Length: 277
Length: 282
Image (cartoon, rainbow over all chains, first blue to last red; front, top):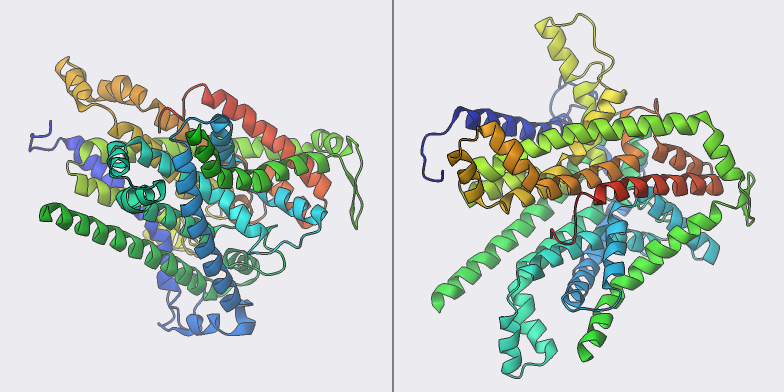
């Protein structure tokens, strides 16, 4: 099968199907990307009334869209904090699950529940809890925790996949050479699984940066960017909405492409090191 | 012994997060669902009124019917599209490089904003949107189609757009583990391409299909924002009812709705989990 050179007819049908699927995924986003450059008199749909950066200027005017700069800053800071925490806790828990310990089954199913429980329950529950205990909900407190209930399951599942394929003899070799557990982790395990940790970090960052449902009752009086965007969808009827959407999608893209670039460099460095040997 | 102790220490941070931000909040919801409330505040109590009102209201039952309709329709479509896309990547692409590129192309949108991806349908589906402009220009219709936006159609379309990836990834993962020799053996034994799919690939991708199903069902069942934005406020899902009660500060009523929703989702999961062993399949 691998060697046959002539493709069957079904291949071309499926290629066309897949291309349509990709178009379906990206087409709408590209459309608002184009429309965000509408001229000052342009509307929410085609045709374009000229081409300008008018709506992007509007975005940075305080009164036009509320507190865009502040919410963007909060979302980026929160995403960074969630990213770092997700990587550290997922790695730590991933290591724990390699050994047998009592309650591992319960903890595993809790994490799965955290992933599939309707997000609005997390929002409502944490909101109620903080209210009753008398702690003010904040984006860096309760929303931070709410985001972790969403990012940690992804992180842990990735760590499971990683450690299922991990060769334990590397650690045994390090121990034989008298490495302390910390040294084994720092110089053997982490370098070997670094690409996966970068992947966990990417998930942590982007999922938190875009999270809406788990933020709605947990961020307190200050909005994160997705909350700000949601507010705009109900009261903004100009292409400034598209400018904001394009900008925030662009930020996600920069983060994703940047991460893929880092992964690529890591792979190249590793290949070079392997040839060097 | 030393090993077990370090395992507990390593698992502790995850456990604490789950305890504080998942377990206790869920218990809190159950407790508050029995409380009383008035226009200004919630009042600790033990009453069944919230459930009484919820379960006897026709609005609730209509919302459940609507939500189930969205869930089943979205599930069928995401499964069909997701399975076909995964099958293409796993069995029709020959190099790892092309597989990786296609996989990334399918995955990247998942990491961008859901709300923006919903909004981006407006210039396409609206009354004066691209689809209507095109249809009228070609002459297929002489007046704009109204059902494209703010309807059940646009809600399901958005769900399929957002969640097909949750089918693609687990099914692709299952398919990549299928021993290619089995497919070759089936062909050698005279199986048609269709028989290969139905009798070899589908049974062996069952766990991926189940995991994808769990994702799509739970995401749609608990959704409120997609229904709110894409139906233009014209239809109500279970999640949206809860969200509206939260906006009105009727927390005990929202909590009772949330408990009922959670119970419904758990029953569905109990049925679905019979089809797959998630832990084994990682």
